[in-house]
Structures are given as C-alpha cells and as structure tokens.
Image 1 (spheres, rainbow, N blue to C red):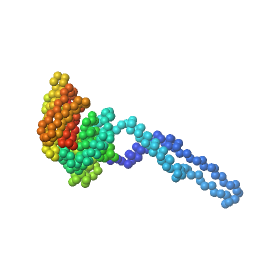
Image 2 (image 1 turned 60 degrees about the vertical axis):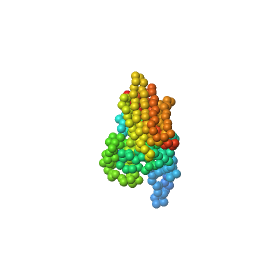
Image 3 (image 1 turned 135 degrees about the vertical axis):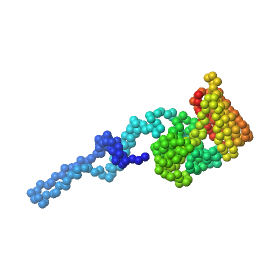
Image 4 (image 1 turned 45 degrees about the horizontal axis):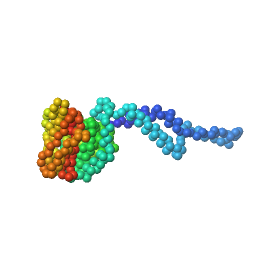
Amino acid sequence: MDFDSEDIQKTFLDLIRPWDAELKGSLVVPPVPPLVSPKSDDSESASIVPPIPEKFTPNSGDIPAVQERFEALLKSRLSLEIEQNLPLFPWEDEVLEYQSDRVDSPGMADNVASGLNKSGSLWLAQLRRLAIPVALPETMLASLLSACESIVQTSLREGVKVVKVAESFFPENFLQLNELAGIVMMSPARNGYASLQSRLGEDVPTTYEAASPTQQMVLSLLAAREMIAALTLTLKAGVGSSHQWMTEIGTLTLQLDYRIDGDDGVLHIQGQLPCGGSLSLANGPSLSMAQRPEAGMLSVELADLRPMQPLQLKVQLGPDDSIGFAIVLMS
C-alpha cells in the first residue's frame, strides 16, 4: 500500500489540532523578569538590554515530560478515533460482530508449539501436496496444521480464520496480512499466487527462505486457506461425500452420509484407516466412537442433528497421530 508523505502529515496535523490548547496548557513557562536599563546620561556606559526571545524553549530536562504527555494524548486520540470508526476487513462492506472465539489462547499456542515438534507427523504427506508454488518447511507445515485445527472449529468467517492463522507467524504485520488476505480470498484456488504476483510485481521465489517478507505472508495465507478447506467437511442432506487424506503409511478415506428423516437428521461416517486407530464424532456432549487395533474399516453415527450444527470428527492413527475435522451440515 502506497502512502503520500504530504497526506500522512496532513492527517497527523488534523488529529493533533484538537489538543493544541490542552498540550500548550501542559507547558509551564517560568516568568521572565523585566530587564531594566540603568539610568545614565552616558549612552556608552548604559547597559545594552538583550532582546526578549519571541519563543520560550524548554530546558532539556523538560523535554521528556512534554514528550510523554504528547504521546499519551496521541495514543488516547487514536484509540478514540479507532473506536468511533472501526476498520473493515477487505472482504467486508460493513462492520460485523463476530463471536468471541479466542484463537490466541494458551491452548492455541500449545498446539502451534506441538506442531513444531511433530515435523515427522503422518499427516505431512498430504500437506506437501498443497496448491502453492513454493514448498514450505515441514516444521512450518506442522505448525500451520495445528493452528488450522484449532481455528477451524470456531464460527469465524473463512477470511478471518485465514488471517488469524497467518498472524501467528507474522504478529507484527496484521494490517498487511488483512490487505493481502482480501486478494488471496478472491483469487482462484489453483493459481492464487499467479494472480497475486502481477499485483505485487515480484517473481516467484525458488524457496520459502528466499522469498521476501510479503511473499512469505502470501504463501502462509495460501497454505492456511488450503488447509482450512481440507479440514472443513461440508455436507448436504441426501448427497454422499468422500474425502481422502494422504499419510506417510497410506491413505485415510472418509465416506460421509447425511440424511434427514422427518425432523431428525442422521450423520453416518465410515472410515478406512491405513493402520490401527479410532474415529470420534462429537456434537457437544454427544459422542460416537469406534476403534480397532489394525488397519481396516470403522464407522460412527450421530442422530438428532440440525442443519448448521457444528460437529467435530477426530481421527486417531496409532498412539500419537491425530487430526481434527470440522463438519458443516447443510439442509
């Protein structure tokens, strides 16, 4: 985003103008004693009266106090301006209220940290197939997956989820991430970077490490969008759905069937596991779980469901590797 220096200066002056009187009032100027010329008939012997300075310059010891006062006023004014004129995400036309799902909680931090320790996770085989032009480091892929698993269960809008995930890697670039996310979310899934490249005016890097900070943000946003889409299973009543996830030991296949019988919605999930493990389908306190010690078929089912009801599916492979999916039911 380009800014004109004159526009920035004008905006800054407009912001601080209302405090001019208040700021001036905070400066205590010591009185200047009157200067009197000695009476003398001899003009040469008369003392020359130095001119009174037009402006009072505070002593160097006064400057920190004035500066602190000014910064406090500036911060207060900016906070008030932001509260009265809330900024919009690039994909929003008006200010919307979202549920207070905290994704920056200690739980999410733990998930990101655990992702860094699971660079050999079974699930990375699928992540290496993401539709992004540059391969990401495996530790970053694992951390992105952990962050996406945490946020995919929330009711935030997709664009907000993508920004929140990328923000865990670029905490100081929230505004730029929002601007880039507005472009990423409107770009085609398979060539999103190509459409961004023309706007950014940069060549595709050979590696993630060689990418510029802006390119790294774009790559993280694209990867987060792909992962969130893969972890969100949307079902329409009466229409079966099949999903596959490549692992290091084989393919996990999920067959999902959602049907409505009168007022009662029933979800049936059948999973083909590449090794021993379990399936857990949860709807709040309701839980359906199945497990087996070796590779093979498992199925879980929940009834008395309603459209748009949030459901969670957890797949466990072996003793340590698990992944969580969010299920969205459509009427």
